[in-house]
Image 1 (cartoon, rainbow, N blue to C red):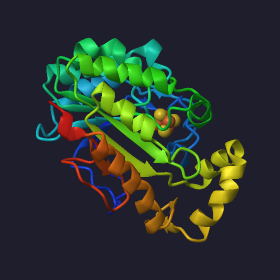
Image 2: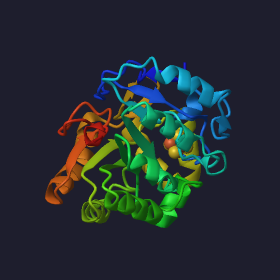
Image 3: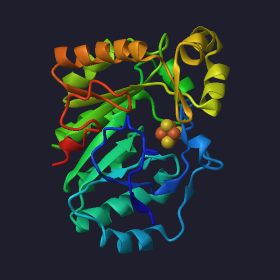
Image 4: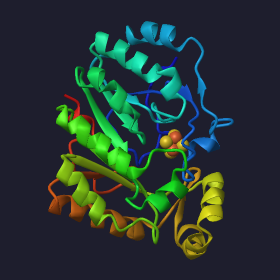
Length: 282
Ligand code: SF4
């Protein structure tokens, strides 16, 4: 099956509503250094098309529980690099629209602008990830994703089309991108309603990539993750106190600038109607 009930590895820290997860592509070409899919998808940074995707989606969509929405996507970006050419996300959205299925689009690209004609006419919300306004840092963190300024402009255009949007400021990496006041202010100005945030939870491979790109910060962080932190399943977490401090700062900023806030997989500060922004689906 391609459309499955979302299963965050049975994590007790996940507060997502019951929903479907659907990835039009296997793997993702944005190559974010903090990405966790490389720990369970072979050749994960080489995105590829799923066999008979459209035929299977047409069939599966008829069987889903209409009370639930589809989160698109959790293991790859629906607007990953190759979607510009293949346009499969557009084709899937058309099917969901025809079948009146509610969709939460989660992306790090501005490519959804191409599909606003469909998105604006269906029950959908868009959640765009922006981790920093610093283009140099973003280039190192998310080498193949569009610049943050383009993502902001795309969010603004979506809002002007009447689409309700949220932003994932995720992950927050201490000493690197924890100061997000300018970003939060900007989001609020363009009409973003909700923010989801989460701290960096490295696995072995993502930590290796992070260390290569940011060796000095990795040195400073090592003790916070591997001595004072905790291990949750296959990920390394900062201590609860440290994570709470980082997240509370962003929660307070969101309050100041009039947006709702929730953490993702932290176990605290879930304050909005949904953590993932799905309450914004019209
Ligand atoms: S956009 Fe998401 S799935 Fe794609 S590489 Fe980045 S973190 Fe991984």
